[in-house]
Image 1 (cartoon, helix red, strand yellow):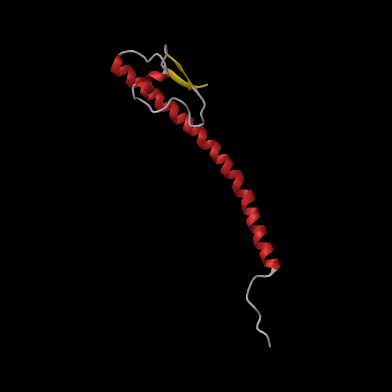
Image 2 (spheres, rainbow, N blue to C red):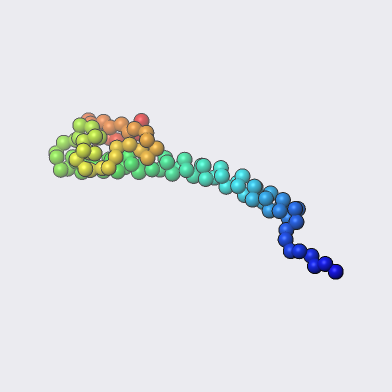
Length: 100
């Protein structure tokens, strides 16, 4: 008698591929959605950081900065844009930083 060689049958392999495909169909949309949430939270954190830098500048200099580039030039912050590259707006009269 011949010994049966060990290994997977075609049906077993197809079932494994089907399970992996279903898992990917569930996982990929969740990863894309979480990436968008992370980008928006990153922009909110940047606005808060810039708002704090405006306050620090005001305390040290006695006046509000003329624009956000002043904060970057004087080393208060490393960048004045959101992680996704969108620009922020600044009102000198109120000292408010906001998303455009």
